[in-house]
Length: 418
Image 1: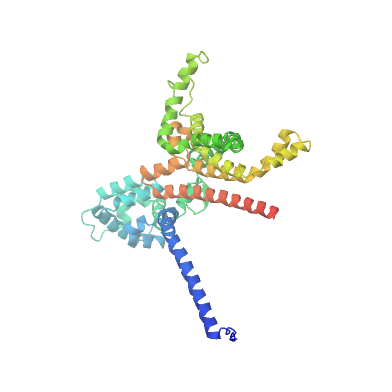
Image 2: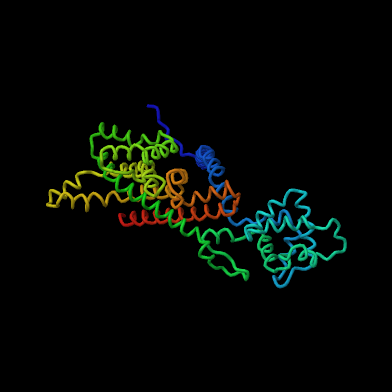
């Protein structure tokens, strides 16, 4: 009979080769995964990280004066703030002020200095009109106060010094109604000038009210969708998703038509004899809440529905069979299992409501405008990018804090379960 030779053991060389091939295959697999994710990473960097980074930088950027008047800015930063600056600084200021008018930088300087004192742009224009044609050996330290007495005041040059630093906390402080005094101490602005604390408080109240209303309306609807037969549930889900297929602007304008004084609702109520005169339902807080709840309600229903759909009804039936009242079984057995959906929906709705602009601007009154309105105002109307970025940065901080709180609560719940 032929003898069967035993298989030879793999040599050490072939074993090393196998390991090398495995490592190569693993590297190739990771490279393919990275190549698939790379377009998304680049997209996020370009449209998310880069704009947010620019916004954060704009909130502390203060390079306007440094760009147009570099010599003046450098010199006045070395001034101790006592008495008037030196002749060298004033001469550099006069020379660069004249040059800024010819080179087109005067508007940039005037706008920045106007943030420190609303009359600064006018002061610059009056000074330029009275500048001598040839200064010669004239002392600018004596000539500038003769042109306008404001140049003989220390506060005027202190304002220029505050504008000369390449970075500033002025916008961030102003966004919470704070400022620096002439001595550099942080203090609250005058009571009649305090605006933004009330705006942030109003924004949080409106966002919280919308979130609560969405939860009160969305929870029973999500429960109904989760417990109905599949066919009926899918049909009703179409109506929940229907607002996503309509423009936000169209939905907001529709509420104006419905809620206005001569709108469908007031006309119908007066026609039925319920009202003698129309109610003011729009251009106030009520209109803002109604329109925002209508738009954001699906964002509450969908997370709740996804969680409720995974909850087995046997738990609630078991509690009832053991003698619990149906409501007690629902409240103590079913509701605690929906906490993750409630938290996710509330966080999503609240964060989206914080940044709303179009709806409050169209259906709200002057006392119902949120932070986003002032961000748009400083961006489009006054071109004060520093204040717009500071307000946006604070709104971003609030959003991140809310997300961190949500993340910590979810992690604690997972630890408890484990």
